[in-house]
Length: 150
Image (cartoon, rainbow, N blue to C red; front, side):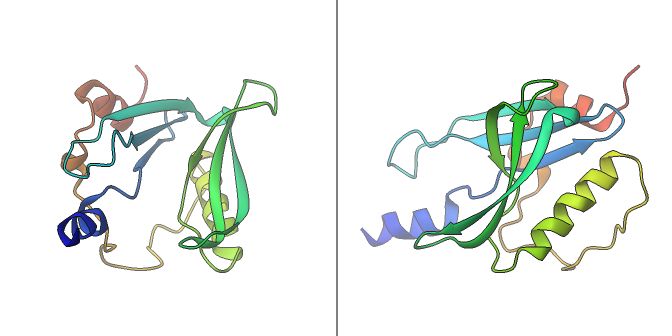
């Protein structure tokens, strides 16, 4: 039981990396899908691609046992409507709402080719950081996410 809890605490994926390509106006989301209770089983992953024009920011108040505060979601809507087809998590919940608003504003300004501050608020690597190559992005999508349309 101790090994199971240790494995769940240290090695279970918690984040889903998001890549922004403002030249293509697309975002790429790397999602892990929990397959079973067994943390030693490799979790299947998918990469989803969305048009930036169809993504809207939503901030919700979370109040469960382990995740309290305000969380930023990306709501993917049908083109030209506000009908949500899918949601994904942008950030973990934080106690104050203002950092979430600032993050959404920063993303919007970046995707609109406006000048943004590129200095990180918290320098250094986060505790749960993993190198990009450990995420094993499909090669075609990895190339597409870094380039402009031809």
